[in-house]
Length: 517
Image (cartoon, rainbow, N blue to C red; front, top):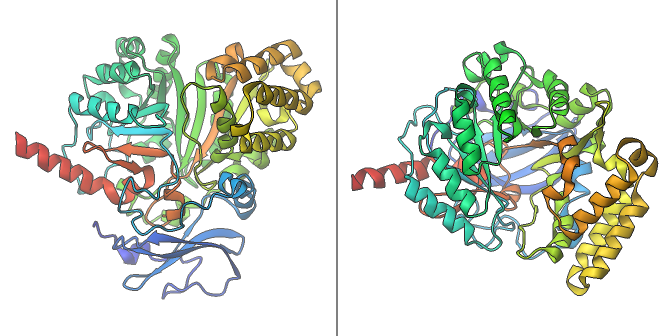
């Protein structure tokens, strides 16, 4: 395992004395879990604790001492997200907490969630050298690049899973360093995956012809690294000025109608003051920008040894959103990703093949969809309904979905939709006929396309909190829904891969590949 300098990364001084023991603070234990030691990576006991108005993950390794790291949200947002935990509502006790093999044995029979997004790293090559890259560790430069045939094999493996993941994310490195990336996209498209390409945008900005080719081969979404509207921020986080490159990449995607999701690495004191500006930019360009995903910095890869770890980490995303949008979007307008579980259970009654559930931990991220009015106002979609009433109906319907017929479910949902709507706001911003027609389409044939023209006025606002060796929580890992697939056809939860499995997986593949050459 890769060693970390304990003298630099011991417990944050704001929360600990010089021996690493929390002292002089009031604290409440929120929950118990297992984690890993940031130094030796052994599994150890851990607690989520509320300390002086902050949520911390604290743990002690017998050999390397005590560690504490700030959680990514405040106690009030943490508790609000917990209220929408699918597992708590449905009383799922079939999976034991802290299974023995986790996080070392993947994909074990103790994992509680299926794959929603499959991730394939297609190369380690990159045309940037970002100081905050979570996928490349300093001193671990390997020539990891599975062949196109191997990647197709990995895609077929994912396609055969039940339930089949709906989406594939191609990552790296920079995937477009591969000249055969369009053909790889075509292979995934042929297998009926939604195709997503994670990219820094450099090559998309440089070549319209490449963008056109990717569109023709079936690329659905560009997952575009987008951190700021200021070049000095890009120089700090990415090593060079990139603002005009990002804008050109978005323009080229607009020209060929490839939808864009902006992906912002959020660093306290660096770019966290731009949350509101990035949201407004997405709203102004919702025709092509389908969403924004903010990712609070995770200290893996090149960032693992950063001495500003706790200073940069301590973000309260939901509260920043409310402040920087002047209350247009409130903290209570952002819900855990797992809120999608009940709708998917209900929608499965109308689908030919089952979808995987969004049964991740409520601590993995926050999300909502934003409607952009004709005057440019941002309205969270829960403002159009009495959300608590409608959500209760969804939960009740999901719990009884196996015993009810389609017509019964459809009638209950349509009635609940009509009874829960904020008719005044709907009439003013959307129109009764347009929304009623859309609701009927969504209930009869649930899909993104059922939103019709409304989808060009809707964008996703989300925050995904990746874990690093300091914040690693096994109870979150075992519910992960974003999974890497490896060349030897293993399924590994996202944060387990980046913290435990990435280096040995890449080294093993490279050794086997070299041996066959």
